[in-house]
Length: 143
Image (cartoon, rainbow, N blue to C red; front, side):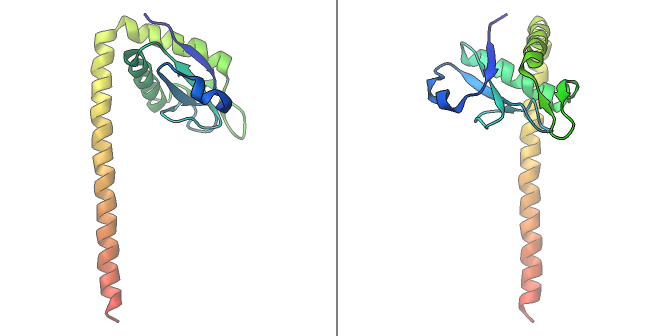
């Protein structure tokens, strides 16, 4: 098992983070979503190595996709996650994933393949939409 720290993101010390890190959205319906770039309402997770970062990033991504953070949501208008509730939850989930490391890596590989496939489908849908616009534009331009 490895160690990591989770803190509230402070934009004034962004350049001071020298170790591998990523961000977790803390407010809104997408609370718990891992991010590569910071936003005003997020936590920062710092680790010692890039391997640990990837392990935790994909763990958080999988938890977010499976809506495991919903039970941590607080607030009636804009849901948010409290840091003191988020920390023990992530530590518990990381310990479980680390104990079943082989299965975890299989799951992450499958998630990454599905993510790539989804990205490809979205790109194809955009191309189809462009083709529809072009056909309609061509048909209406003659008049």
